[in-house]
Length: 110
Length: 114
Image 1: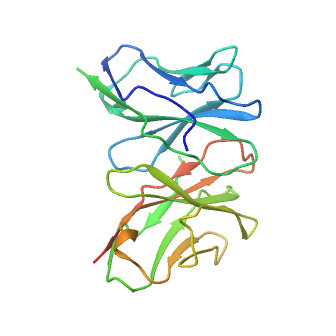
Image 2: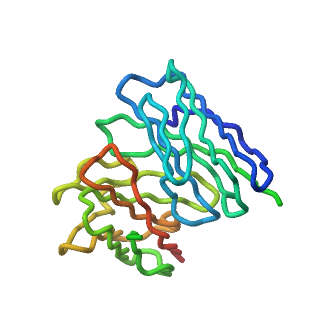
Image 3: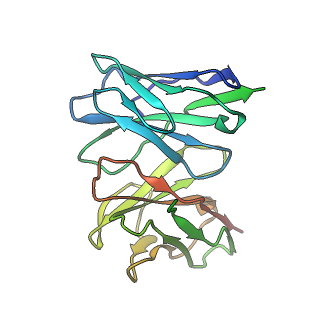
């Protein structure tokens, strides 16, 4: 089963930063944190991943706490097209499968 | 930007029939995956494939399912004798040699079993 806990839903105003939290208190040393999103019924879209350092790419930033028990995905300037379900997934190096939970439904409003 | 391509977008079949879902992964990727999502439910892992063999599979992936990479570009999922409960969106994904990196998903094939 999924090893993460996320809020069921969040709202964000267009143009503001969206901060999506994730709790993964049982994460072990060789497990990475991944973020994906799914817009309506489209295929999941990879956003970013990290092990212990903060990461940034063209889509988002990932902030992982020092004890690695939680993380935050930051969309710096949310747009209406960022409305989606966001999944935080913990995955070990020695397994292929992503275990999707129910995620956070982010609604960006004008 | 390269993307994973899946065909057909919608497949309708009768119960008991065989179906083949097709995927063209991103060209330089070496790991391939199938997931499914029953309407209103979570995305579920089915199988991963690397170096022409299954590297991992879930309990869902029983003897009715098989995967194949028949040539250098296609990756297929076959369901031998479809059941009503196989109705779902099926997503193909691929990832590059660095297994730690992200998996890139296609738009999916909606399978409807009547």
